[in-house]
Structures are given as structure tokens and as C-alpha cells.
Image (cartoon, rainbow, N blue to C red):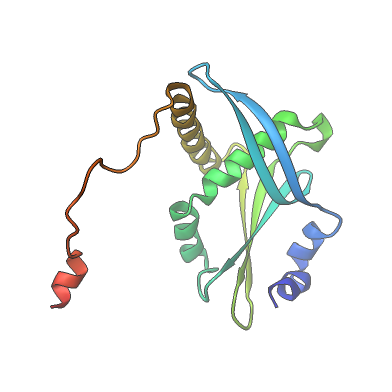
Length: 168
């Protein structure tokens, strides 16, 4: 049903028809610290100058306000900037991407579709880029030092969550 909803959506079908699907990208990156990492990305669909990603969400979560919350909470802006940069760093000049589009399909009838775009150079793009660069700096440092921060050592006291206490 979600696939059919995308087929019936004029904007989605226009972009997805003749797109390359499930495209893998490997792109080296030198971080501000001088450390080097290899980025790996798997794009749902690409048809320059746009990359597309499909998100299936609960009823009502395709609405602009709700999806904006999801995009920040689930770091979709980070995904968009990361994928755009990885692609653009290794593609031929004529294949550069200018935007990342999310096609959002609600998973219950009537399978509503909404569309959201993050353009290269936008505030959202720069915010996502800053986050993924910070994440990659942390990753590269962990690889270099072979030290991976985790949870507390030893035993911790398991306590009743506040929401359980309030329910008593």
C-alpha cells in the first residue's frame, strides 16, 4: 500500500521513475582535526540533482510539524547532509546533488504522502553537517585511541523510573 501511495503521488513518481535505487557510496573525508575516515552511505534513490529517501511513519506523523520533530529527533537532517556530501565528494561534476527529499508515507489508510526537502547550503543542511562532522571526529578519535566510551563500569543500582513512581 505504501508503494502504491508513492506511485500515485505525482511528485514522488516523477522523481522516483528512472532513478538509480539503493545506491552505495564510499567517500573519504579528511576531518578538521586532520584525521581521515571513510564515509559509507546507502541512498534509497538518486536522480541528479536530487537524492530521495522514503520514510514510513505512523498516522499523523507526516504532517509538517510532526515530521519536523521526527527529522530532528531521529537525526534525518544529519542523514541528509551526510549523504549529500558523500555523493558530491565522489560524483562527476554533472551529477552533483542540490537537494535531499524525504517522501513520507503514513503506514495506514489512506496512506497519505508528504514531501520535505533539504537543500545544499540551507540552515538545516549546515546543522546536519556540523553534527555529522562532530560524530565522525568522535568516531575517528575512538578508532585512533582504541577507546570506546560506554556505560558505567561495575554494577549500577536499578531504580524505579519516575513515571512509575508517579503512577503509584
